[in-house]
Image 1 (cartoon, rainbow, N blue to C red):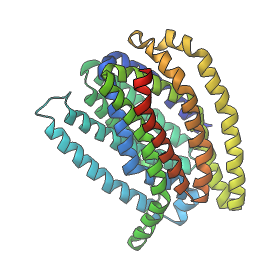
Image 2: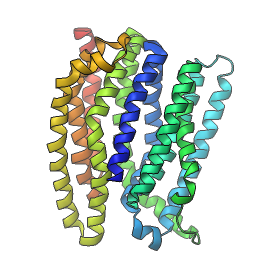
Image 3: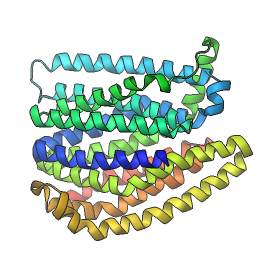
Image 4: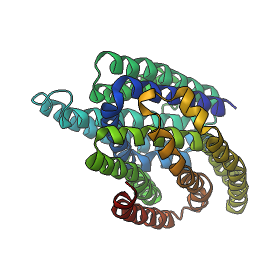
Length: 377
């Protein structure tokens, strides 16, 4: 229950924070922020997702004690990639001195810092979930949300630049991990260097197909928002981004919360009772996800007019409801893909079909970008 409570807290505060930043920055700057945020997710996925997924699949309470080289391999890989990303962010920050905080280099630097914070935080959150340590997970999420809300809102209020808001997002997540670093540690053991290549190979074989698919899914919002910004300006991209973010969070909040718990349960069932039992658990999980997500989608459609009138900043009203209405069916299907279908391939370690589905989605999305704007605006 602590995992579910933590996710509800996280989703609720992120929802409010997104609306607050949209109001403080205004449609045009929020459009830039949203486009950079989409790029941040692409960076995070490409660099860190294979490791996070490997942590959820191969790390557990038993592994923590009996196979410490799994955690050693994860930590070393994260340290190397984090150092490279931090160096790239510093270079981009240096280049931004010439064109100011609203230039492309500054926003790129902020996006890299945000990606670094998200990657490191998600990894440690995955470790806490894999250990079924609900208290630690809730504490990590709570500290991160308090810091993120305060720091991002302050950056948006005082500095009014997307780059600084992105940097505050990354720094708040790094600070949360730093504050709780002691309970997140594993028992000290001798590092078995000869196992590092073996574990990295295992992570790559399992994670690369999944991150290829996830990178495509994360690329879609970037392409869509970039296309809208190019054709209609950053303000229109801001309208679309707020509707997409609120709709996606509303439809995937419960699915993500269930997935955080149910997939780890399937992994535990596999450890205790074998692959066949784990597959039966995944099938039961998929039925549960569908039974709960469909009413959420219908409910969001029903309350959309009231939601827009009550909580959406006035500058975004009108376009918000139009975009959200169009997005509901597609985002519901995407949520089912993530939380009901993908776990089938994850538990079998057959992740290549997930890439084929993502490629099909990218092709259809690209066709839509070519055909729909000239026809429908």
